[in-house]
Image (cartoon, rainbow, N blue to C red):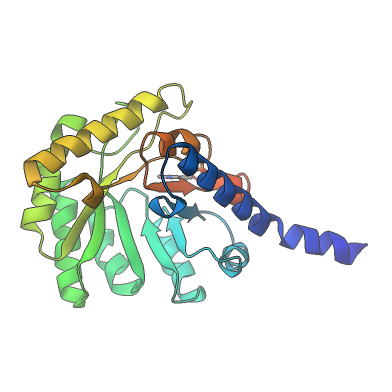
Length: 245
Ligand SMILES: *Cc1c(COP(=O)(O)O)cnc(C)c1O
């Protein structure tokens, strides 16, 4: 009996992952898109490495973390095949250790100032790595507690990253919807409008600029509105006791 309980507990996150992947697939198909057009990032902040390993074993490769210190501790304990996304607010003095120590860092989703872009650019050059993928974070809900540039400033920052930071690969835009989800459709539409403006100004095609939007409570809505990168934490790993939402 105990063995059975343990087996069940062990498989919880993996089972939840499969359910989320299924929901991603259904939402993509409903929107006449293929599941390959939507990347799932498993947001593992505050969760123990054993749980991440379970989800990795189930096939998940993209993981997201919010705190530099936590990522620096977890990354060496996880397989090198993991593609890490940094999705928290990045302080400029943390850019260097983040780049130097996490060689399999795949994407920084939260570039929200020229200063942080320049710090990352310099750190990537210093580490001698190939260009780092980054998203520009946009505050589409207007909440003061949220980081990110104003929608009206996204073109300028995207342009700086794209044309002024040779060690960064401008890959898209990211936003966090309203916490109570009431205005997320509008937040997500705002991000798609930001993408149109960026593409026009930089001469990029829509397919070249990803949209990172959608979390546990609204990822299906986000996929319907064009998200290419959803960040799902608690629905896979369970509720968090502490840390940011
Ligand atoms: C925590 C977090 C998530 C995941 O949130 P859930 O509601 O647990 O899915 C996604 N994006 C960012 C930026 C986060 O901080």
